[in-house]
Image (cartoon, rainbow, N blue to C red; front, side, top):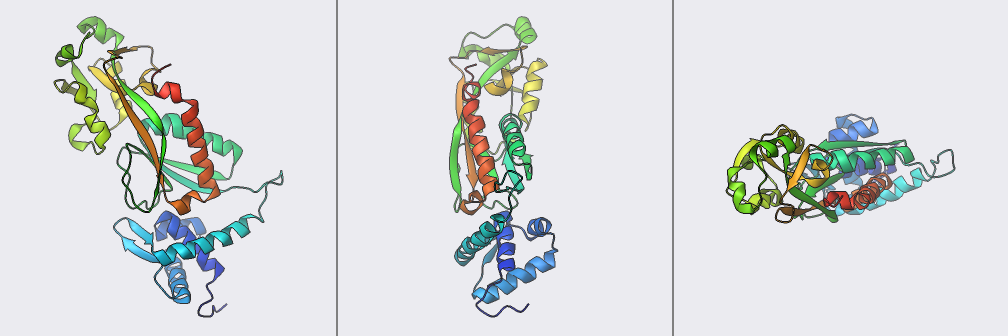
Length: 303
Protein backbone atom coordinates (compact mmCIF):
# COMPACT_ATOMS: atom_id res chain seq x y z
CA UNK A 1 0.00 0.00 0.00
CA UNK A 2 1.35 3.43 -0.94
CA UNK A 3 1.56 5.93 1.91
CA UNK A 4 0.60 9.50 1.01
CA UNK A 5 3.03 12.24 2.05
CA UNK A 6 2.22 13.46 5.51
CA UNK A 7 0.44 10.22 6.47
CA UNK A 8 2.97 8.07 8.35
CA UNK A 9 2.42 4.33 8.32
CA UNK A 10 1.56 2.71 11.65
CA UNK A 11 3.90 -0.18 10.75
CA UNK A 12 6.74 2.27 10.13
CA UNK A 13 6.07 3.93 13.48
CA UNK A 14 6.49 0.57 15.18
CA UNK A 15 9.79 0.13 13.34
CA UNK A 16 10.93 3.51 14.69
CA UNK A 17 9.85 2.37 18.15
CA UNK A 18 12.11 -0.69 17.95
CA UNK A 19 15.09 1.29 16.66
CA UNK A 20 14.58 4.12 19.14
CA UNK A 21 14.52 1.74 22.08
CA UNK A 22 17.49 -0.40 21.08
CA UNK A 23 19.59 2.20 19.28
CA UNK A 24 20.47 -0.34 16.60
CA UNK A 25 18.96 -1.35 13.28
CA UNK A 26 20.22 -4.92 13.68
CA UNK A 27 18.59 -5.36 17.10
CA UNK A 28 15.32 -3.90 15.82
CA UNK A 29 15.48 -6.21 12.80
CA UNK A 30 15.88 -9.27 15.03
CA UNK A 31 13.03 -8.15 17.26
CA UNK A 32 10.64 -7.53 14.35
CA UNK A 33 11.71 -10.44 12.17
CA UNK A 34 12.90 -8.14 9.36
CA UNK A 35 16.25 -7.56 7.70
CA UNK A 36 18.50 -4.55 8.13
CA UNK A 37 17.69 -3.20 4.67
CA UNK A 38 13.96 -3.26 5.35
CA UNK A 39 14.44 -1.42 8.64
CA UNK A 40 16.49 1.27 6.88
CA UNK A 41 13.88 1.60 4.10
CA UNK A 42 11.00 1.86 6.61
CA UNK A 43 12.79 4.59 8.58
CA UNK A 44 13.53 6.52 5.38
CA UNK A 45 9.87 6.27 4.33
CA UNK A 46 8.73 7.49 7.74
CA UNK A 47 11.15 10.44 7.65
CA UNK A 48 9.84 11.38 4.21
CA UNK A 49 6.23 11.14 5.38
CA UNK A 50 6.85 13.22 8.51
CA UNK A 51 9.23 15.63 6.82
CA UNK A 52 12.40 15.50 8.89
CA UNK A 53 15.18 13.43 10.41
CA UNK A 54 14.01 11.09 13.18
CA UNK A 55 17.34 9.45 14.05
CA UNK A 56 20.89 10.73 14.36
CA UNK A 57 23.97 8.56 14.07
CA UNK A 58 26.21 8.44 17.19
CA UNK A 59 29.32 6.51 18.14
CA UNK A 60 27.24 3.88 19.90
CA UNK A 61 24.35 3.54 17.46
CA UNK A 62 21.28 5.66 16.73
CA UNK A 63 19.70 8.33 18.94
CA UNK A 64 16.29 9.94 18.49
CA UNK A 65 16.16 13.54 17.35
CA UNK A 66 13.62 15.93 18.91
CA UNK A 67 11.26 15.15 16.04
CA UNK A 68 12.02 11.47 16.51
CA UNK A 69 10.92 11.63 20.14
CA UNK A 70 7.64 13.23 19.08
CA UNK A 71 7.12 10.44 16.55
CA UNK A 72 8.02 7.86 19.17
CA UNK A 73 5.19 9.11 21.38
CA UNK A 74 2.77 8.48 18.52
CA UNK A 75 4.32 5.05 18.00
CA UNK A 76 3.75 4.20 21.67
CA UNK A 77 0.05 4.99 21.22
CA UNK A 78 -0.05 2.56 18.30
CA UNK A 79 1.76 -0.09 20.30
CA UNK A 80 -0.57 0.39 23.26
CA UNK A 81 -3.61 -0.06 21.02
CA UNK A 82 -2.16 -3.28 19.61
CA UNK A 83 -1.26 -4.59 23.07
CA UNK A 84 -4.80 -3.92 24.29
CA UNK A 85 -5.99 -6.61 21.88
CA UNK A 86 -3.72 -9.22 23.48
CA UNK A 87 -4.84 -10.77 26.77
CA UNK A 88 -3.74 -13.83 28.71
CA UNK A 89 -5.90 -16.74 29.87
CA UNK A 90 -7.02 -14.74 32.91
CA UNK A 91 -8.30 -11.89 30.80
CA UNK A 92 -5.37 -9.60 31.73
CA UNK A 93 -3.20 -7.78 29.23
CA UNK A 94 -0.25 -10.04 28.44
CA UNK A 95 3.22 -8.50 28.73
CA UNK A 96 5.90 -9.76 26.37
CA UNK A 97 9.23 -8.82 24.88
CA UNK A 98 12.93 -8.85 25.64
CA UNK A 99 14.40 -6.60 28.36
CA UNK A 100 18.18 -6.16 28.31
CA UNK A 101 20.00 -5.21 31.52
CA UNK A 102 23.62 -4.28 32.12
CA UNK A 103 24.80 -4.47 35.76
CA UNK A 104 27.81 -5.24 37.93
CA UNK A 105 28.68 -8.88 38.61
CA UNK A 106 27.39 -9.02 42.17
CA UNK A 107 24.19 -7.11 41.40
CA UNK A 108 23.58 -9.30 38.36
CA UNK A 109 23.81 -12.50 40.38
CA UNK A 110 22.08 -11.58 43.63
CA UNK A 111 19.61 -8.82 42.69
CA UNK A 112 18.94 -8.89 38.95
CA UNK A 113 18.75 -12.68 38.56
CA UNK A 114 16.10 -13.28 41.26
CA UNK A 115 14.20 -10.17 40.11
CA UNK A 116 14.21 -11.47 36.53
CA UNK A 117 13.03 -14.88 37.72
CA UNK A 118 10.13 -13.24 39.54
CA UNK A 119 9.17 -11.30 36.41
CA UNK A 120 9.34 -14.48 34.36
CA UNK A 121 7.04 -16.33 36.76
CA UNK A 122 4.49 -13.53 36.57
CA UNK A 123 4.91 -12.78 32.87
CA UNK A 124 6.20 -15.88 31.03
CA UNK A 125 6.45 -14.03 27.72
CA UNK A 126 9.02 -11.56 29.06
CA UNK A 127 12.63 -12.61 28.49
CA UNK A 128 15.35 -10.87 30.50
CA UNK A 129 18.94 -10.70 29.23
CA UNK A 130 21.58 -9.75 31.83
CA UNK A 131 25.01 -8.49 30.78
CA UNK A 132 27.42 -8.53 33.74
CA UNK A 133 29.96 -5.71 33.57
CA UNK A 134 31.46 -3.05 35.87
CA UNK A 135 31.59 0.32 34.14
CA UNK A 136 30.08 3.81 34.23
CA UNK A 137 26.75 4.51 32.56
CA UNK A 138 27.17 4.84 28.80
CA UNK A 139 26.08 7.98 27.00
CA UNK A 140 24.66 5.86 24.15
CA UNK A 141 22.59 3.04 25.59
CA UNK A 142 22.50 1.11 22.31
CA UNK A 143 21.09 -2.36 22.69
CA UNK A 144 20.36 -1.90 26.41
CA UNK A 145 17.08 -1.09 28.12
CA UNK A 146 18.41 -0.72 31.66
CA UNK A 147 21.86 -0.09 33.14
CA UNK A 148 22.71 -0.49 36.81
CA UNK A 149 25.89 1.29 37.89
CA UNK A 150 27.77 2.18 41.07
CA UNK A 151 27.75 5.89 41.92
CA UNK A 152 25.48 8.67 40.70
CA UNK A 153 25.72 8.76 36.90
CA UNK A 154 26.12 11.86 34.76
CA UNK A 155 23.95 11.19 31.74
CA UNK A 156 21.77 13.17 29.35
CA UNK A 157 18.49 12.22 27.72
CA UNK A 158 18.01 9.52 30.31
CA UNK A 159 16.53 8.95 33.73
CA UNK A 160 18.76 8.09 36.69
CA UNK A 161 16.94 6.31 39.53
CA UNK A 162 18.58 5.69 42.90
CA UNK A 163 18.05 2.04 43.81
CA UNK A 164 19.74 1.86 47.20
CA UNK A 165 22.99 1.47 49.11
CA UNK A 166 25.32 -1.43 49.76
CA UNK A 167 28.44 -1.80 51.87
CA UNK A 168 32.00 -3.01 51.23
CA UNK A 169 33.85 -4.56 54.13
CA UNK A 170 37.30 -6.03 54.70
CA UNK A 171 37.35 -9.83 54.97
CA UNK A 172 39.88 -12.56 55.56
CA UNK A 173 39.65 -16.34 55.43
CA UNK A 174 39.64 -18.01 58.86
CA UNK A 175 42.75 -20.03 57.99
CA UNK A 176 44.53 -16.91 56.71
CA UNK A 177 43.77 -14.93 59.86
CA UNK A 178 44.81 -17.86 62.03
CA UNK A 179 48.20 -17.95 60.28
CA UNK A 180 48.84 -14.20 59.87
CA UNK A 181 46.85 -12.72 62.72
CA UNK A 182 43.83 -10.42 62.70
CA UNK A 183 44.49 -6.67 62.31
CA UNK A 184 43.19 -4.59 65.20
CA UNK A 185 43.77 -1.14 63.69
CA UNK A 186 44.02 0.63 60.33
CA UNK A 187 47.76 1.08 60.91
CA UNK A 188 48.27 -2.69 61.02
CA UNK A 189 46.78 -3.13 57.55
CA UNK A 190 50.07 -2.08 55.95
CA UNK A 191 51.45 -5.59 56.54
CA UNK A 192 48.54 -7.28 54.72
CA UNK A 193 48.07 -7.66 50.96
CA UNK A 194 44.76 -6.49 49.44
CA UNK A 195 42.48 -8.43 47.09
CA UNK A 196 40.49 -5.99 44.93
CA UNK A 197 40.01 -4.59 41.43
CA UNK A 198 42.88 -4.07 38.96
CA UNK A 199 43.65 -0.42 39.56
CA UNK A 200 44.63 0.41 35.99
CA UNK A 201 41.44 -1.11 34.58
CA UNK A 202 38.93 0.25 37.08
CA UNK A 203 36.51 2.63 35.35
CA UNK A 204 34.19 3.48 38.27
CA UNK A 205 35.33 6.41 40.41
CA UNK A 206 33.40 5.37 43.52
CA UNK A 207 35.04 1.94 43.47
CA UNK A 208 38.42 3.52 42.80
CA UNK A 209 38.35 5.64 45.96
CA UNK A 210 37.02 2.81 48.11
CA UNK A 211 40.54 1.75 49.16
CA UNK A 212 41.48 5.18 50.51
CA UNK A 213 40.97 3.87 54.06
CA UNK A 214 44.33 2.09 53.81
CA UNK A 215 46.48 3.36 50.92
CA UNK A 216 49.53 1.53 52.29
CA UNK A 217 48.12 -1.96 51.55
CA UNK A 218 49.96 -3.63 48.71
CA UNK A 219 48.09 -5.48 45.96
CA UNK A 220 47.73 -9.23 46.05
CA UNK A 221 45.36 -10.93 43.60
CA UNK A 222 43.44 -8.37 41.53
CA UNK A 223 40.66 -8.89 39.00
CA UNK A 224 37.93 -7.12 37.05
CA UNK A 225 35.42 -9.63 38.48
CA UNK A 226 34.20 -9.42 42.08
CA UNK A 227 33.55 -13.16 42.24
CA UNK A 228 37.30 -13.62 41.73
CA UNK A 229 37.87 -11.26 44.68
CA UNK A 230 35.68 -13.44 46.90
CA UNK A 231 37.29 -16.72 45.87
CA UNK A 232 40.85 -15.35 46.08
CA UNK A 233 40.11 -14.13 49.60
CA UNK A 234 38.70 -17.53 50.55
CA UNK A 235 41.89 -19.09 49.13
CA UNK A 236 44.03 -17.02 51.53
CA UNK A 237 45.45 -14.53 49.00
CA UNK A 238 45.11 -11.68 51.51
CA UNK A 239 42.38 -9.45 52.85
CA UNK A 240 39.57 -8.77 50.40
CA UNK A 241 37.56 -5.58 50.13
CA UNK A 242 34.28 -7.27 49.32
CA UNK A 243 30.57 -6.47 49.07
CA UNK A 244 29.11 -7.63 52.38
CA UNK A 245 26.12 -9.20 50.64
CA UNK A 246 28.51 -11.51 48.80
CA UNK A 247 31.12 -12.20 51.50
CA UNK A 248 28.64 -12.84 54.32
CA UNK A 249 27.33 -15.86 52.43
CA UNK A 250 30.55 -17.75 53.22
CA UNK A 251 31.15 -19.09 56.72
CA UNK A 252 34.91 -19.30 56.08
CA UNK A 253 35.19 -15.52 55.67
CA UNK A 254 35.51 -13.24 58.70
CA UNK A 255 34.95 -9.50 58.57
CA UNK A 256 37.76 -7.50 60.15
CA UNK A 257 37.69 -3.93 61.47
CA UNK A 258 33.97 -3.57 60.70
CA UNK A 259 33.67 -0.21 62.47
CA UNK A 260 36.72 1.28 60.73
CA UNK A 261 36.24 -0.20 57.24
CA UNK A 262 32.66 0.20 56.05
CA UNK A 263 32.55 1.72 52.57
CA UNK A 264 28.99 2.60 51.59
CA UNK A 265 28.22 2.84 47.87
CA UNK A 266 25.02 3.35 45.91
CA UNK A 267 23.44 1.48 43.02
CA UNK A 268 21.78 3.66 40.38
CA UNK A 269 19.54 2.59 37.52
CA UNK A 270 19.73 4.39 34.16
CA UNK A 271 17.20 4.11 31.37
CA UNK A 272 15.62 6.23 28.67
CA UNK A 273 12.28 7.79 29.60
CA UNK A 274 10.69 6.25 26.51
CA UNK A 275 12.11 2.85 27.41
CA UNK A 276 10.70 3.03 30.94
CA UNK A 277 7.24 3.55 29.45
CA UNK A 278 7.35 0.04 28.01
CA UNK A 279 5.24 -2.14 30.35
CA UNK A 280 7.70 -5.02 30.26
CA UNK A 281 10.62 -2.74 31.19
CA UNK A 282 8.57 -1.13 33.95
CA UNK A 283 7.81 -4.61 35.31
CA UNK A 284 11.53 -5.46 35.44
CA UNK A 285 12.44 -2.13 37.08
CA UNK A 286 9.72 -2.65 39.69
CA UNK A 287 11.09 -6.13 40.40
CA UNK A 288 14.62 -4.75 40.81
CA UNK A 289 13.42 -2.14 43.29
CA UNK A 290 11.42 -4.74 45.21
CA UNK A 291 14.45 -7.03 45.42
CA UNK A 292 16.66 -4.15 46.60
CA UNK A 293 14.17 -3.30 49.34
CA UNK A 294 13.87 -6.93 50.44
CA UNK A 295 17.67 -7.31 50.63
CA UNK A 296 18.38 -3.92 52.23
CA UNK A 297 19.85 -5.23 55.52
CA UNK A 298 21.89 -7.88 53.70
CA UNK A 299 23.26 -5.30 51.25
CA UNK A 300 24.36 -3.09 54.13
CA UNK A 301 26.09 -5.97 55.94
CA UNK A 302 23.74 -5.94 58.89
CA UNK A 303 22.67 -9.58 58.70
